[in-house]
Length: 401
Image (tube, rainbow, N blue to C red; front, side, top):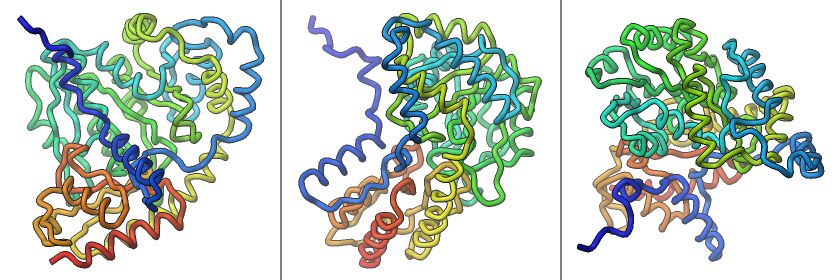
């Protein structure tokens, strides 16, 4: 009997659509084409100097040349606990913190620790591309709660209730959201948290965009909004977005002691400790002030307003105002099926491919986020490139008929 070379479990995983689009755009640029990419979800700013200096010093410290505790440097865990109290009002002990290799490992370990095969997870769509794969790897079953532009991509209690079954174990809650930029108000966060508490659910909340909110919006942690949830809530976060440290790969998971202990056991066999140099850099980041993110947020806000205005000026596009993160998520459903350069793209994936080929602009189609008929555009790129890129898209789509 011939056995498959690759396990069914791993074969079922899809590659990251956002990274794939970014890689294709970079390959085209390397080949000499003037591609502008809206795909990557990372700040276009360098990591602040004081954080880099902390890493350089760590390289010289013999202590960091050796293994350190699998769950993270004690001083970093303590600093993350203090930062969490400072930024969201959620008080935890350092023992409730697990330092991970970026936010993605925190996502995977949270679901691997909480889920048994067949357990259901309520996932509000559009969703970030990694969530479904992490749930799938853990043996869980994803149950989509689909939102759209008419509600600003916010889910209601009624929608959540409709998807609830006796197998539901976890609610995945993300605000601010990737890919939509949606931000739930403090009142909405509390309402959803109390609903989850009443239903006996766990809540996994990804708070990595906590400091990137705009206009009248404000970040509210579900762990703080509903204190009674603290024994059933897992908080995911990291330094990537706040401090422009996507490449440093330091995230963390905060939760009840038994969950953190179990996840730490998993990590001890999967990767051992996170790079000590990265942890030292993260310690400088979370222990410092928020002046770096304040500067970045001002730039993102300016670009956000420009992008949303330009997108809504394109006939056939509808783009709600994103109030957080650094993404816009316009609907392009009205453009599908129209003729454009001799083709009739029937899906947002086909339209995105046509735009990349004809306008040399890289966008991520909504298929990647569970809702076909949309694009995700990151505005974490320079102002001039942003205007040029959206202008190219507008010029091309003006030909659609």
